[in-house]
Amino acid sequence: LKDIQYVYSMYYNKLEFIRFDSNVGKFVGYTELGVKNAERANKDTSQIASRKAQKEAYCLHNVGID
Image (cartoon, rainbow, N blue to C red; front, side, top):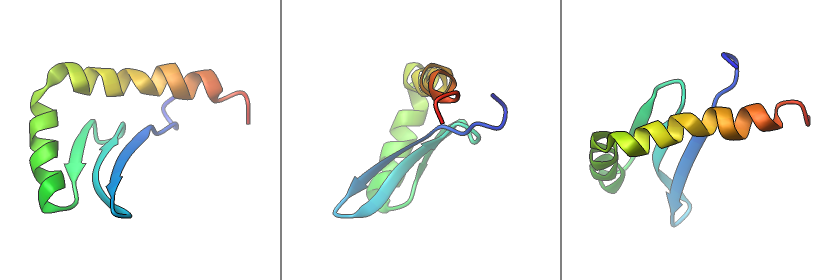
């Protein structure tokens, strides 16, 4: 499970503006809007915990399929 990385990205108009990376453990913004949303999302500990749990729930469940 240490080698597996969970990435959740959001796009607007074909541009990635925010990303959660399980290796980083927080949201990172790539545009002005994304930076503001990342700051807001990183303050919400329940949202961070939920995204971290997705690594185990989604990735671990599907690792044997491929």
